[in-house]
Image (cartoon, rainbow, N blue to C red; front, side, top):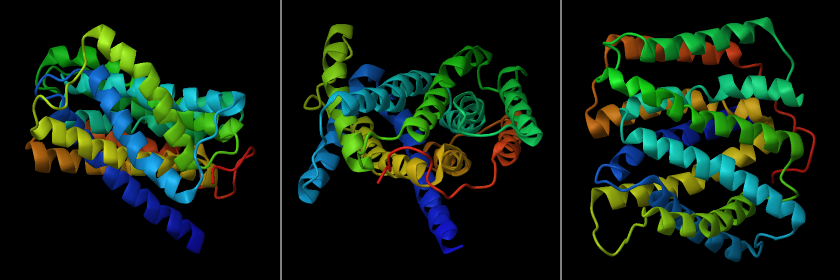
Length: 303
């Protein structure tokens, strides 16, 4: 019981931090910054912060054949692909809608977990998936749902982010972290991400000069990156400690906090269809979640 309460408390803190990053991401693109440049500097900040922690602990990321594969996987599925999808979508969709779509992580994690043999099928979870799909239909179906009906075309792009998170969580649960603790794993993945995104940002013309201006957008990027460093490390630890589907329950809290933070910081107002979609998503989350599994999954420990 004490272990479950501790994990639940950590989930609440993760949800609050991750939820805050939703409106912060919206603010980061508010002045025209493009995804690749934002992702690069986010990786620099995360690598700097967590790299300092690694040095203080005397546990620097190890680079080898096995660990490089984990770094590449985490960089691609945990930051680069979902980061592009999120920042691109944030240019067009309200932050609260993005927070609602993040709640699909457990719904998408479940079929992936079935395919990898991480979980077993239960009919009630199928009901959760149906509720989640119904919530998405409410977002993109009625013309009065979104502020602009044309925004519906961005919903599939926004769903790339939760799908990547679902795949990543299941991959870590299935194959482990190659003996890396969460801090070292995220630091190594951030360094790999820097090497990948620097030429991409330059060639694509999305490079951001941090010395040119400093304002709300740049401050939001820094705060979002700091939150990402803490929350994402906790998420990887949670996958190793309690399994991918239990860790994905943070989406309950990300969704709730994300909507509340968006209302508070951005003064967003949503239609009744959006609130109904939120209700369906929460119901879907409740149905799709199995009983929390507190035992470590097979594979190396996440630390």
